[in-house]
Length: 178
Image (cartoon, rainbow, N blue to C red; front, side, top):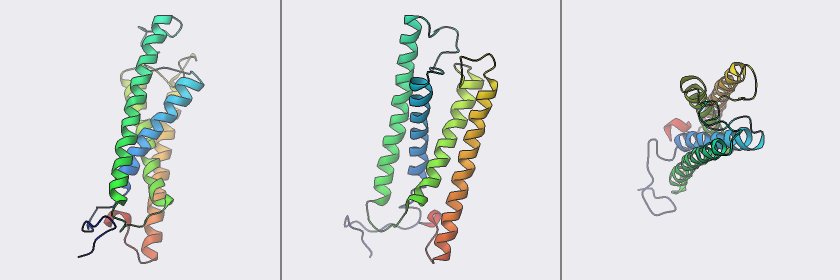
């Protein structure tokens, strides 16, 4: 029986894959980029800034929006924690070799998934905020955000495919078989 550094039996199949942890980390880190850059630094929007109920030009409205921004950040932080835990578990037995390229594809996919889900749900379905709440027509910014999400997913899938082809050429098992 083959054992890893932890003394546990080395697992076969999908054990050790960094795909799911990478996607979860991408979702969380994409949320951090959105929250830190768009909510805090550029102040283009807050979680409820387009809802009409909590305008950001009143103290009460800004308090409510700041609370919801914090809840949003806490949620993205949980995605990062779960992703880190799963990544640690996937790599803990020491039997799997991986590179930054192996992880970066799923990270980009996760970030793109974040943009698509957050963009469709918050910007279009619920209309609680837009990428830019400070412009006359925010639709183009919202569509650009969705296009960025699709681009990130396609880039991540392309990078992952290139990494799998490279590993296959080197005689290694592709990531999806690890």
